[in-house]
Each structure stands twice: as structure tokens, then as C-alpha cells.
Image 1 (tube, each protein chain N blue to C red):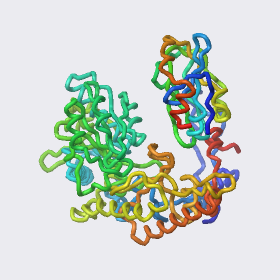
Image 2 (cartoon, rainbow over the protein chains, first blue to last red):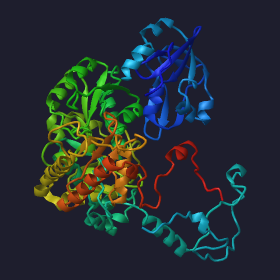
Image 3 (cartoon, each protein chain N blue to C red):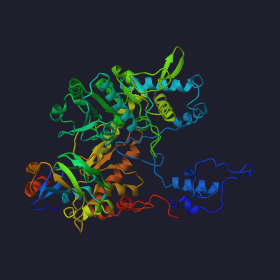
Image 4 (spheres, rainbow over the protein chains, first blue to last red):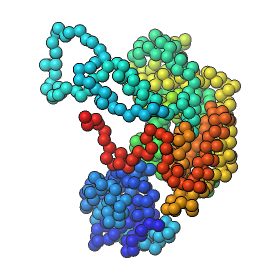
Length: 126
Length: 495
């Protein structure tokens, strides 16, 4: 059974969002990292790039598959977790502690369409 | 199998060579090279004799597994036997000694093979004309999509930027569309494992350039609604693209052109028995319907009276303005085209009709024999391949740690019995996908031996999954650490 953290927002493509003021901290769920297996490469955008809700902004690669990352919100990337480039295994170790990008949201109301922990738990069948 | 894992650098002995050159009496004329182009240190090449090189690569080759050594049921890859007559013909010096820049009048025989292959493939697929220039399956896909894009642009329709791809598609389909600058839209499969028409309908608008399909699809299932799908895509103004990866079961029986496909590519290294391996050389000829003939890439081989000419290259003065352009330097991987042509002639019109039915019979035989041990998510008759979703009893209930055997473990265990593993974890529709394609070139005895081993592995899993989880036990390397290899690859010799 995978871990699901209360108080976060979740997308159907298994990203989580933690809201810190106008900034959305984005990562992937524990369920996603388990499904992927050992992650070997994290492809991330540059700070200053714009992201769009539902559009891919990067990718995770594991020994099993490559999977696109979809942004749960629109906005501008303010920060990227550089540590993941050298140590992609951090996502396997703790998918919630190791965020991927931070985004300054252009439309915070987009958050309303995301799931809460209970709804996400139902989606992944746990 | 004798274990051998040396690198050629480890055999290197200073000063050892496999040649003897006469003394250089003229000096080294490198002074006129700009300094930034000159290396500052000697190249670090292995210093070995001829016999060192021969033994090294012969030993390495014996660590290999291929269709010439054993059964290779790799789903989606059509690993059929490659008849040796193909090699004999390709090695004939009249073909193998040709230079691509020879005047056309001196290579009429080779051009005749090109023309005859165009006609043979057109007849087998129901298309109007082929280019044989693309050098691989994915290269063929890209060429086909360039033709698709060119078709819309040539009509002045610039708004068609989307390509519809099923969720069961080969990964190359969305990748080729993206490389071609087109946007990928995914259409879902229904509960029967086929394209969901209700999901397709709303996607078909005037932004659609076309749709890519494999038929039978990657689950080995024939798309029974194909005529309806072709009508829908055409009604929306799009073109229908056929990914020829799964052409084998249809060969000589059903033609994509008759199903309504406008563009297709074939993998000669799958359906037409040319070698796989080492990343090439492959060949991905592209066929089109009559309406798209002028859009085919250049150079083209055309007949003028009794002579064949190569026309259409940029700057040649005989350009064909509608063409999608040049996709390879010359006329494709000619040696591969030649091998495939030899295969077609060897089978002949009568026997080519047996390829599809026999590949379907073999796949269904293996499927029916194994479905009491492996989960079969899609019941019914399959085409040339089928997908299991892991073991029925993975042994988890009996294991001390509660961990059962996975599809990966089954695949690894098969190596102990001298079989190549099937394709695993593809298609992505199932979590434990195990995709088996026996091809028509295997005998019942070989299939029975494989079936016995698969049953035995399933019984082992149910009893003691640890046997599988630690497999393979008998190969030179058991389970390489793929994760570390991918995270921290060592890509050069650190001598």
C-alpha cells in the first residue's frame, strides 16, 4: 500500500501539489514512484519556463519505462530541485519529501479541479 | 556457454600490431592543418594482433543468443528465421561491389530489383507505389508522416497538426509524430482491447492530420471496426497510417490498402526475414495510395523505355516539386531490400499466402496450451501474437515473505532453459504483460518444448517463487544491476 499525504492536492496523472502562498510545490505520488520502479533519470524544465495545466513539463525514466510529468497548474517555474538530477533515487526514497518543481501560479483557481487525499486514495484503489 | 567478458583494451600489449607498413620516407604532412584540429596526444587504441582480434570477437559472438541459436518468441518483433539464401544472393559481387554513385546505366540490374520490389510490396499491401529509401521502421514512420503533412500542406490546409494514436500503440508512433512536428492525441481502447469508437469520434475535427494504427494491434487482436474507422478518419479530412510492425499475420491474406489505409511502412526485418540486430541495418519501405504517389520521397527509380533512371534529387534538374523530399542519401539499405526480395521470390505467390495463417495458428496453439497457467485478459482468437497478464498463481501465498513471482521473474527463468524471453511489460495496458510471438517458422516440436518449460516455470512459481526470483541460474551473468547501470553508466574505458 502506498503512502498518501493529507492536505495535498492530487492530479489524475499522479502528481501532488502543496500550496505555499502563491507557489505550487509539485512532485509525484508514492503510488507513481512504486509503479515506475527504480527511477534512473529526471528530466526537468529550467527556472523561468512556463508550464500549463495538463501539459507535460518533464519526464521520469526508470528501468521499466519512461513517463511524462504533467503540470497540475499553470504558471512560471521559480525553482527546480537540482538534487534530483544527480540522485533520481531520492524520489523512490521519499516521493513527498522530494519535490520536483515550484511554480508561481497564474490561476490558483485551477487547484479546485484537483483531488484531495481521500479522492486520490479512491482513484488508486487504496 | 564458455564465460568470456574481456574488453579488447585488456588484451592490448604496447607495440603489438596486426600489420607492417613500409618506412615513411616522405615525412608527416600535418603542418597545414589548423592547430585546433590536431590532437595533442596519441589516440588510445588497443594494440593487438589479428589473431587477438579474431578470437576476441569470436568469443564475444558465442555469448550471444539469436534466431540461429534458439527459439526467440519476442512479441511485436517477428523474430522469424532468416533464410541463408538471402545472404547468398546479397553477397553476389554484382550486388555487393556496387557503389551508390555509379552511373545508372551500369547498375540496371540493381535498379530492376528496386523496381520489382516496389511492385511486389504494392501487390502484397494493396498500395499504389512504394519508396524503399527509409533505412528503418521508425525512419519509415517519419517518412510516412512527412508525406501526410506534405499532403495537407499541398492542399493549402495548414491547420492539421494532430495525429491520433491508440493507447496500445508502439512507442515509436507518438515519437515519430513528435519528431515530425505534429501533436499526439491518444485514443483509448475499449474492454475488448480494440479502439473505442466513442472515444475516437470527438477527436476527429479539422485539426487532425491523420491517425496511426497497427492492425492487428499490439494485443494481437484484429481491429474489426477498421472499415468504419477508415470512413470516420477520411470523413474528417484525415489520412489513415498503417504501422506495418504487425503485418506478418496478414501477409498474402488481407491488404491494408483494401482496409482504407492511405500510407504504410513495412519492416523488412520483421515480415520479410531480413536480419534484426545491432540496431541495423534495417529497412522501412513506405507505400502510399494513388492520390499520394507524387508525394513520395526522392530519389525515385523510374522506367523510360527499357532503361531505368534515378530521378528527383535536389539540384538534378528533374526535381519532383510535390515530393516530401530526401530521407536518405541514396536508395535505402539496398542489401536489405535485396534480401527481402530474395525471400519473396523464394516463397512465391503460392507460399506467401501461408505465412499469415501459420503464424496465427502457432500463436493460438501456444496461447491455448498456456492459458491454464497464465492470465489471459483477452479471450478469443488472436492473430500472430498474444499477451498474458502474469501468472495465475504467482506463489505469493506460499512464500515466506509474501512476495510472488512477477513477469520479469518468469522471463529470467526462461533463460535457464535456453529460450529467449518474450517481450515483457509491453503493452502498458496490463501491469504484468508477457507478450509472445512464435512466428510461422517454428515447428510444433519447438513450440511444445517451449510450452512444457512455461508450464514447468508456472509450477515452480506456485511452489517456490524464490527459484524464479533468483533466476537465471545458468547464464554467465545472472541479474545485472540495471538500476545502477542506468543511473551511473560507465561509458568509456578507464584504463
